[in-house]
Length: 308
Image (cartoon, rainbow, N blue to C red):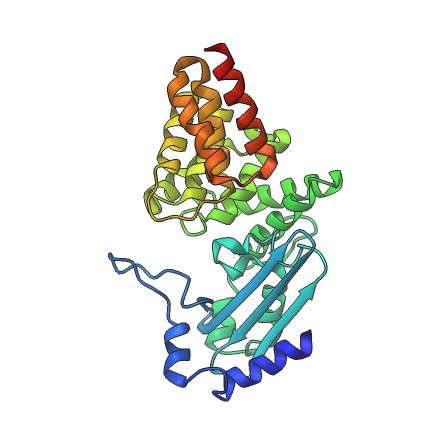
């Protein structure tokens, strides 16, 4: 319950849950071998938001979601629980950036100090045009577009709103160097899937190029780029990206892994049956029947064996 989580928060503050040194370690972001800071500590995400150190975690399934957010060095904690997935899924919190949560943004805006460096750093430059969005932060626009693109799958009006907001954001920052991110690319790919590829082709290409250089082994970036190349008709390039994805070492097997194997199996089915079989067999071995891919793979394997 909410009260249980707030009780946990107080116990975390007073050292009942863990020692001060352990807490400091948990709240410290890991670093790559190149010295790049990851957004994750021990069991929690950690970010600097407008000069304030923030740790947070979330929960999500189709029928529930939650958010626990704590501003360190301040007596500020946000706990949200929901009986649907809208607390976390639209903002793509799985990518580890709380700035895309409209709930968190509202919290920061109202409860971080009202003046001084923190407030100034958090409140980035305001937009000066766009009907209905005057004086919205540029970061707000991306967060709004992301949320509306999620809702667009069920509501046509949200699709139009998502497109309008994304167009406005891109018009204000066309180079996207600073805000190129997995959530932004996810939003653009989602809009592409709603038959608006040509509208955002240039932006998708730009963000993809930036992320490919920045995160050459990120499975989400590889999957989104493959989807875009496939949409462009550049099948060979899409296949190359998907093959890179399934060959990644030290990454969690997730839905993108299964879908990549399935796409590769389908592509090679006629060109190279032996290679196709390895991909379908891998899906069966994983055993996660997301989207019915295990059943489909078993059916295809039986069909291929029958031909032989």
